[in-house]
Image (cartoon, rainbow, N blue to C red; front, side, top):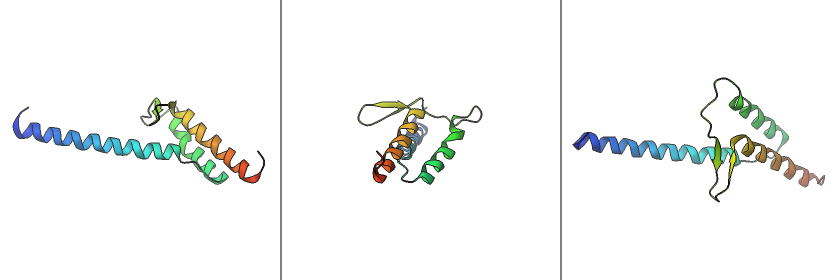
Length: 96
């Protein structure tokens, strides 16, 4: 591949890389958003249940790498968010 074709190939590759990076950022935001109500936790659980089913799973990453150098398996990241949400609600109610 040479000339204009190579230039176009590189341009499209850069666009694909940028789109993937944006998708990854949004995905991490979604994973790290803590519900603030029981209804929010229920909605999150209903949303993620099919992601871990036996059929038609999307291509989930094996683990989530955070900017601070730590990582977690995808299911572990969701469990962490849910547990922190429940803990925050319990603290707000004075039950913890």
